[in-house]
Length: 256
Image 1: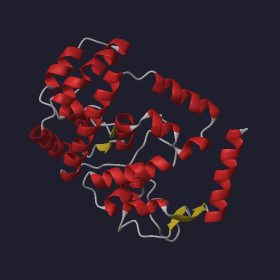
Image 2 (image 1 turned 90 degrees about the vertical axis):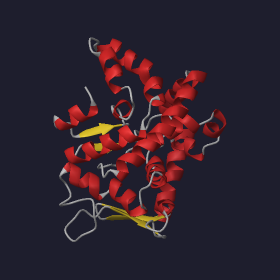
Image 3 (image 1 turned 30 degrees about the vertical axis):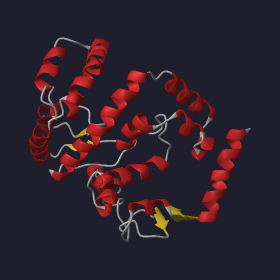
């Protein structure tokens, strides 16, 4: 089903730019026609086999028209750029030396290593293509005022819980968002989408006391979201020393 058809039929969200790669190409109809009679695993296999063709046929003008039409439907896009970036740029050397590795459970480390070991050279080439096109689609959709939310798909390999959201916000800014727009994509916008903005998503009297307190302004530099001074969880204050102690405990548990 074409992305715009799904959107007009009240699909509410699309994750990982699925359907968007085809919609922003010059061969969407051809690709979908080739899948028409397939189901289940055969359909998934065919879609995966077509991915390189869809990426190579990326058409900016088509994508801009799709973005304009998509914005009118209200369908929300969650591009998970951090997932595409990790697939394209992660290396065995950088993965082995990542300081966040020590916080992962043993079973999660093993799962990641199995997936990384199974990647072939052709996967790397396709991942680089996907990364380039995903950034371009996200930028075009943002310019067209398509609603976009921050997502990470953690804990997919290389996407560390918590940390990867900061990375995603930075990638949204690199794709044309202002820092404030990126912050809203992770706070107020998802709260509104989920219908909980009356109690969450922004700072106001009567809302949940869930806050991340920073020692630098993220509206000036989105990387300042990483400069966490304290966290308030349902009214419970965790200072930087408390947060560091939690991280040390997590690392110690995994080292046993």
